[in-house]
Image (cartoon, rainbow, N blue to C red):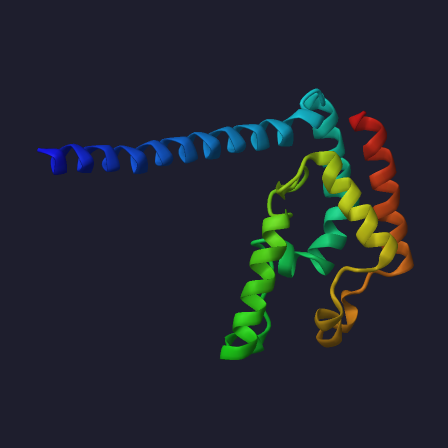
Length: 165
């Protein structure tokens, strides 16, 4: 009888610990989701529509040529993407790129941020020339943005910021 009572007491603790951990996970996910939506929750849909129209007209053609291979489901993989070593690296890079910033469905982009977050990311990448990464540019010589493309993107970012405020 004593052994039965001891086993019942011991069985209680894993259940309690599991419930506490599950509660913490649910709370943290709810907070993360709320924090992600909060900054841009008050952007009028008409502003997003106008920004997207300007994006499609002026910036999307540049991104389609320079960025979609990694940041969109609409990109094309090169012939060497079928070779086992490069294939793994390319698939890993594309998966990471699209998780951060997916341009498949125009603006606002899909991924981990809000519309203003994406403008910040794009502005930083254009300013410091970090995109595309060097190993991509080494095999795709025409992938770097030229001065005219940089100017077009920067102007779109500037006007979009004003419209989204």
